[in-house]
Image (cartoon, rainbow, N blue to C red):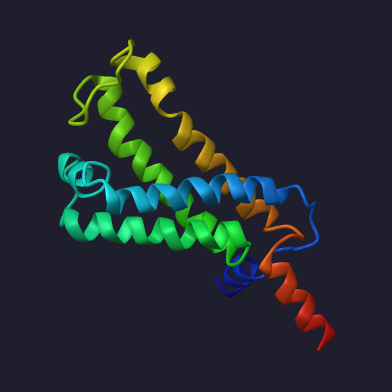
Amino acid sequence: MKSFINWVMNPPVSNQNSILILRLMAGGVFFWEGILKFVFPNQGVGRFTKLGFPIPYITADFVATLEIVGGLCLILGILTRLSALIFIIEMVVAILTTKISLYMGTSPLPMPVAPPKTGLGAVLHEIRSDYAQLLVSLFLVIEGPGTRSLDHFFRKQKTIA
């Protein structure tokens, strides 16, 4: 367990600069989705209520805060692996709680605006954001934050001292 925690908290920071692009993409999406959960109740509390989450007011605010803070962490490249691991869990939960019922045609959420409304076609269309965020988060867990990150900056400072 100690080696896993060390692996999460000390990712490699010598990877290519282009990792910044993926961090900005995933971090930006999580960040603004977190803000939208506070601004638009149908995206936060209303959605969590319809999905049957326990204590939807607290759950929605917790997830929104997690997305804002974690999204900023990804953007800045600090605690990248930890944030990405949390987002992998979040995306798996999001997919399980929303896409299975969409596939079955029993979703409590509004149906997609354009056909197909249920089944595999609807799931493939509606899962695109979850899928992208899940895979980018997995990439960041594996590769770390890259050289254009605060993790890299702090690691470099530690080496100099």
